[in-house]
Image (cartoon, rainbow, N blue to C red; front, side, top):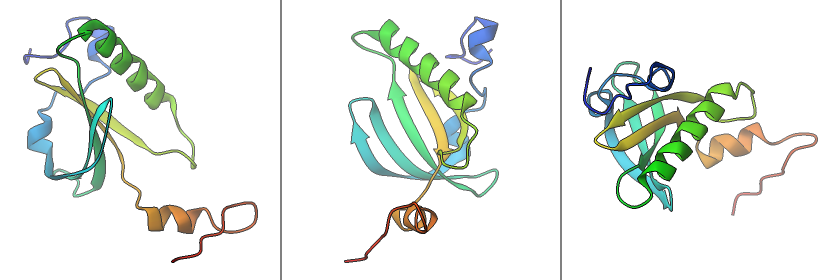
Length: 124
């Protein structure tokens, strides 16, 4: 078993076993928050552009951070709706969870949200 993979089989099933650094290439930071950083990246296996949220679970409050990651992954796996970001999977590497989701640009989002009952987008 690769270092960093949980021993509990129910928890281990939430995470892909592959090395995320071998899958995701061209990482470019596009945001940062209290949870960690968000990156624009390309999945080298599918050539799909994705967003990667890296969340560290080391340092202070390690157990609380780890529990938050588990809750988030369980929640994201359940989301299956046209109006939500598509969850792609989660990988573990050196006490960091790499959450992979579909990447949506602001322009694409605005196109999807225009029409009756949606926002109206006026470019500046």
